[in-house]
Image (cartoon, rainbow, N blue to C red):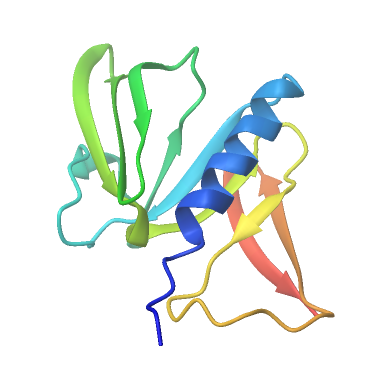
Length: 130
């Protein structure tokens, strides 16, 4: 049997493109302790870091099959960011909270499961609603 590739990079690319096409701001939630992650650690909270991955907030944005990389400003200082896609917990639109969360095992979600993101006081939280 042929090994099936991960659907995560395809879904992240599709959601990023959909948000960009609809003038929404794509944000990703990333596990801050992931191996191979290059982000300013001081911006992580509760083991996660939220990154604005819009074209307006990034420079040289690349979304490959295994990682996303770009340059972004943190506290006014340009820094390189490198995120393994396996570390991405979810992607959502800042304005609407619409998005998608990912499980670690990539098992197909139940047909009744739906992803929801709540944005309160500037801090997003991901919730699975069944």
